[in-house]
Image (cartoon, rainbow, N blue to C red; front, side, top):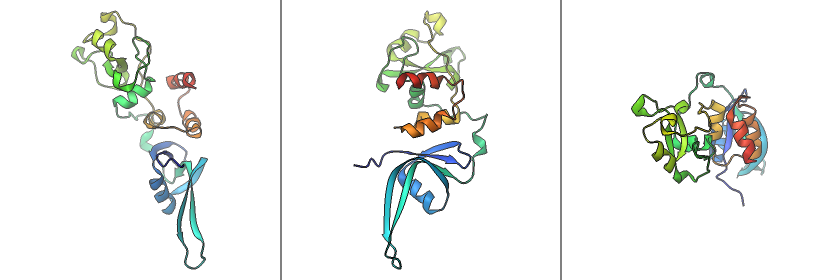
Length: 196
């Protein structure tokens, strides 16, 4: 049974990851001759209609990574991805960065390391994943004021890291491709190696 919910990684022509798309959007890009090249495994074979002249049925192979013409110059050094809990929790591997325990997403919350009430901001470099118990215990204090140890320093994901964080089920070839675009110093390298 083919899983039509699998996502395809779309890149620009230079190979910079841009977004996740579904197989219908990929087919439109192929049909519009926007695909420069493909990488990764073949995910889908889409059969079309039968050509009246040749009698042949059209067939389209959709790969897990497709590069499209053009590039997005705005995704370079100054890019700051939007912050949301789903990607924040995935950045921190569903780990409470105070007690060190893993939790289901429903049992996690966004904690502001420097509380908003003390001038903190709601930005990537000031937020961490916390279980609800630890977040309630810390309340409106800094970790030092609450006598709590922060287990990792929050960071702003690059665009490639953010694309990974948005993925629902990242396939092995897509993961390998994305990892090659992560900075060498990315904390995600270490976190992901623990998961495999």
